[in-house]
Length: 430
Image 1 (cartoon, rainbow, N blue to C red):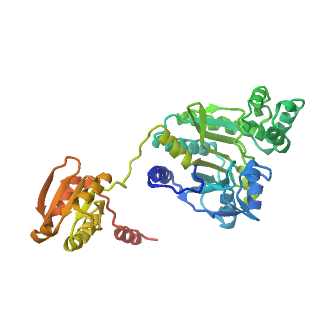
Image 2: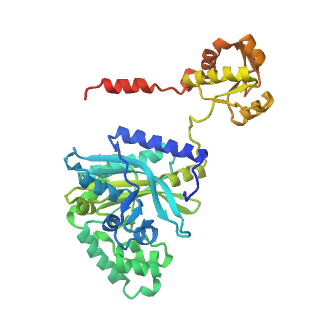
Image 3: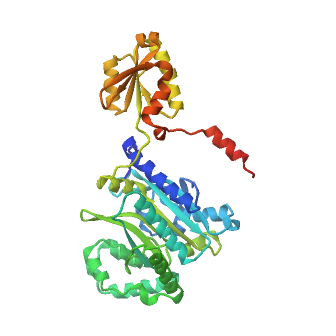
């Protein structure tokens, strides 16, 4: 997890790949990207998440009436109302790639976390629940995480939750001595939160506690049965957990999370669920909604833990070595031309020796170095050094770009004509 440390290039390679996979899957599924404010009203968070929620009480980074965004769903709900999204065709499907903030348990320093997520609004069809779970699973699989599991449950509607809360209070009556202070607080403020307890004694008791199934209304039962039926159609495996409630008071009906078990620990990669009734409270409209939010920093950490490497376009291909003022001038032009052709090129423009510059080229692990000195400038030639084989050849200066394209291959070139893209976009009818 990030606190206040920079994200260095080695980590950015993972984040960049994760973002590419997310954008690719979102684009194929018709999702549009949305960016939400970093600052959010504290009262909005309290209404959606709950005033006594651990996110509010323990984790929130607040400044008077405002706070740093701890999650995106409350802001999506508010945006539906303020941006008049009710007239948009449904389902309304958005995705985001951004950061959230929370207080660190061991420090007053805010912790910054990279996340991506999806929000679907306007339809209550359980097929949408299954589709969102499938797309989220597909993204994690595309990232090479083949050992990810899905935990699934239903928490019913608000009436069912109130009935179940009473069942839990009755069950734990007389067992208070076995509960920690945190679990006693949860039982008092919002009994379903005790399902999230990590205390071994509480877990044992929860295994004996009644399940929510006994208080579910028929509509919730049908919705959940359909979600499972559609997941089976999509060949998505899941673990039903009647004690899982999603970790937040905002959920109703479907809740799910993706997790990995590694070295005896369970790492949560992302969570989601139906937010129909919370959405109705904020949007002042009967707007069904479901969301999923995943933690890119935890995903990247897990990818590195299991030694997954990611493709990167950042690696330089050519290093320009030059010595002397005339060679430097020619190098500046040549580097610009190579880059324009799509060849990723670096150049040492200091006063170091050729040997020193070649040593630098080795550190950058480039495929080739181009060596240009005063004599080469005079003869209009250039030296090409194969950094892997250690061989070199001399070619005419004016043929070097086509020769380098041939050595590297057209497939390896990094080219984009942004002006052409703009012209094509403007040729389309509005």
